Image 1 (spheres, helix red, strand yellow):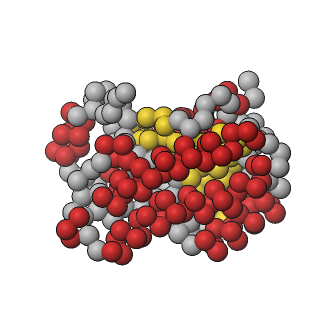
Image 2 (cartoon, helix red, strand yellow; image 1 turned 30 degrees about the vertical axis):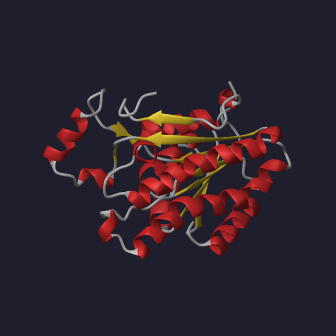
Length: 248
């Protein structure tokens, strides 16, 4: 099966967590990887991981919240690889606080990175997919974009917005053989969740039907599938990777 072999993939927020895992999974599947994030040192480490496993990757500094930065980085990726066929919009931030305490900057920053960043990057990349009439766009949303979460009005709004964005763009580009889907992770083990108290982790796991947190690679495998030839008849879909936290 062709999978993603030989395809060129751009992964944002690729320096750590789910973004790093997506880059590794796509590289293992045979894709050439453009790694994008703000932390160049961490990006270089991921590129070495990929190279050590026989893959090919290049790093590009990109702040997705800055439109000019995105355009410049995407141009550099196309100059390096000749095209972009797979885009994983993963870069995101959190600034959690209750609504009545939330500052405008905390709202704007999360929306700008998580939602506007996906818009800037998709718009910059889409031309590379339209001409050859092939493309895969995968947006990393969240279970909280579907259920909401106290203290995360900004984050939940940005992730819900990504789902609407996914469906709208899927309709716009379907005739060009470009699919646009979202992956909505639930509670995933990352460096951020490692710092949570054991009691809280246990409480969260009790609320998950599968009884445990997910891993970044479990999310990455879902992304790999949606990026592949095998997923060619799936578009406008939100794939839940949440252990059963939200069903239906």
